[in-house]
Image (cartoon, rainbow, N blue to C red):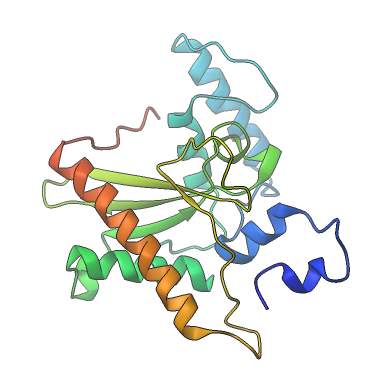
Length: 205
C-alpha cells in the first residue's frame, strides 16, 4: 500500500494535500504568529515594488523564507517524516558528507500547506533542501510532490510517483530505497550545478 492509498480505498475525496503531508510534513500555518508574519512579508514585498494578486500571495523569495520560519520540526537537519529524512540522507551521500558536522550543513524544509502557504499554493513548491557549500553560501533545490506529472513544473523537480509507506505490512523496501535514491540524485545534480554556476540563495528578508 502507498501513502494515501489506504484512504483512497475508503474515501475517494481524500485530498491530495494529505498525501503531501504524509511524505514531507506541513508548514505550521496554525501558529499564532503565522498570519501576522504573512502580512508583514507581504507588506515588505509591496514596499520593495512588487505587485501581485491573490490572497496570501507574495514573491517566491519571500514565500520560501516564510515557510522556513514555521517548520513543524524544530531541527530541519533531522526531519521526522521518513521520506524527508531519507532524501536528505541520500543527498548528503551524493555530496560526500561524512561527519555529523558536515551533514548539519544540509537541511530539509517543507513548504506544504496548500492555500495557506504561498510557496505551495502560488509557486508550486512543496519543499526545499538547503545546503551551505564550502564557499559559505546557501544553495537550495526545490521540489513539488504531485500525482499529476502533466502539471506545469514551477519547482526545480517533481516527485511524480507514489512512494511506498514504510509503516505498511506490504512495504516494498527496495522500491522505496530506489525512489529515494533517484530523487536524491536529482536533487544533488541540481544543487551541484547551482554551486558550479554560483547561483546561491539570496533571501530578501
